[in-house]
Image (cartoon, rainbow, N blue to C red):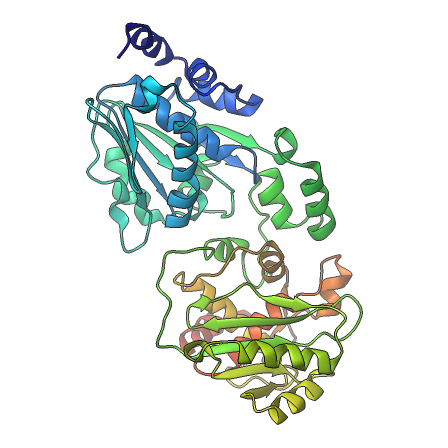
Length: 458
């Protein structure tokens, strides 16, 4: 290595901002510069942020800076999903690696799960943080050890517990970053009960010059400034505690791109929510066991026959192993005509009257309430996954429930939801309808839990 570079690396060891400017030819934004300086001061840094603020670039810079300016050096990176690690973080490292001066670039090799510095033995590894693999941070020791936890709010506590010894070893540094989706766990505690042990930062999209104002305006218009999805994804705030929300936001967020296999032996069930009027949408959800297999499709302004044609085409274009065993359609209002026509066309149709009495359990006002809580129980298993869709996430996390004078659980109606300024949960209710067929109803265990939790109202 050229002596000039060697001398510079010694200087950059304590100045990551200078490293980024000289090696990558960019000037960090205000919050990035502040965060780069913080990691040289203390051993623990937690950053909660909105979307698109430049967090992944920051982590990529830190990884390459650490590996180039220390020897020996190790970096262990984890995140809740392999998608977050390999498709996002590792891809970002590879991008900035290509911008390095050739003398440094040639020292570094990048594979799908490992980054190595030739001749020094320095390396970084990517290990997905999964409940069945709690050893993500075990076995790592170095006098220059760096632990990176990306999307830390979604990482299971077992991962932190298993890696606590290594993360607390002398000289080790830890950086946690992510959207603050959950009001519990190590990431949450870093900003609250354990704050004295951490340097903390909050990065709002409003404070990041790279975030498009059009995105901010859209988030305000679609979800409102008081919504949890705006708090988490724009402000970088933890969601408000709303005990009467049916499905907490953190349960939904943690299911996005989760690394679990689809339950292939389960039947494919489609749910079709038929639009009634105005701005409401007809929506089609496809679920197989633990997986929402595709983004939910929706249509506005279609009459009943047009909608039937769209569903028939969707069915005909689906390959045989993935054809639905049943399509569940809400028969209230316009849905009854759709059910009749699709049956005539030979599709497997199950009409669902969500206003009728629940099929199981004494704690639900109507079948709709039972199905919403069946969907909540599905998410609570923490072994399910779904595509990322902001509209669906917002709709799933919006509805609230109340307890009637008879001690029954009742979900607020679409009209009540819209009166609060939120959109009709058409996408969410399409997914809800997939629980109206087969064994995915509320379990007896869940009913026993409700009996215990609500015994005070009876």
